[in-house]
Amino acid sequence: MTHAQPEDLTWLAQRYVLGELDAAAHEAFDARLADDEEAAAAMASAVQLLATLTTSAPTSGITTSSRNDAALAGWGLAVGILATAAALSAVWLIPSGRRVLNVPGDAADLVAMWADTSPDASAAMEADSDDEPHGSDEVPDWLLAAVTLEAGESTVSQVLEN
Amino acid sequence: MRESDGRQPEHAAAGLPQRLAPDRIEALHERWAPDVRAFLWGLTRNPEQAEELLQATFAKLVEVGHTVDESSARGWLFKVAHNEAMLWRRKAGIHHRAIQKIIPILRAADEKRPWTTLVLAEESEQVRKALAALPHEQKHVVEQRIYADKTFAVIAGELGVPLGTVLTRMRLALAKLEKALRGAIGPMDE
Image (cartoon, rainbow over all chains, first blue to last red; front, top):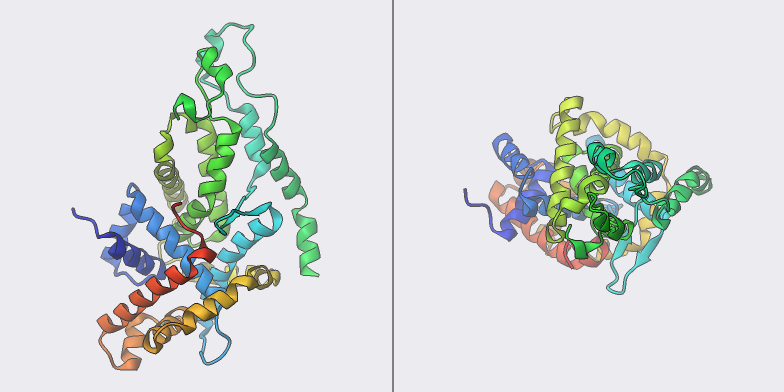
């Protein structure tokens, strides 16, 4: 099966995100997302573009429907999630001007996983008992920062909402 | 990932299964998390769920990231994210049109975040300028589709033009907007 050219793929992904593909096309694109990296990247790009457009909705000259209000809220929340990450995490503007969002996410779980993740148990059992622990005893700084930020999230939210 | 890609040397020396070094995981998270998050949002239409699945995806990276070729990191992350999303879909039984069911929830949640616009205010002017720069007929289609949430078929009917005309106008408009706003959105590839 010949996949669409890059430009067509971008448009296909945009229609997928907008929900403007018929059922068959939607399912076909959905299936492509499983192992077509370019399709997945196109879809992610479409989400980012449409979310950016939605948060800057013009305030005059357009009649919005209740469905649209909800749709705007949906997109707005999506961008809100991105903004939450930016507000609560460290945000760096790299020289190219791109804003990079460093999301702590469920940092406590990541820290725990880093500490607990270990090689295959059988291999560990066969290893010399004097071997050093497989995992690092030192938690990476970025995980510590994420946990600290997560702990302070509720405080920041309260300040911002007041 | 290969030895030169940040594996922990003490593991290599001990002949033990190797893991990605923390700085490599951090770098991959910083580079790809926004794109994977957007991908997951597109699949789930649920920003909060997308966040959970994003963490599950990077948790997998912590576990088995050392087996992934550096040049395939993005594809691997998308694939894992997709698998996580499909698992969630099967469990939740959510159809791709379920967005209508969650919109009231999203709306309520969004009303609790009045600072969202404030945080993104600096990008609003860029968007307004980009929209204003569009040809009138393209701008109209974008506004009607995205802000008035009318389907392309409805827009075509109201304008009295073929559906294909509306689709073309939207396609051209989005291409121009993406190019104009690339700095605000962030490039997928550097």
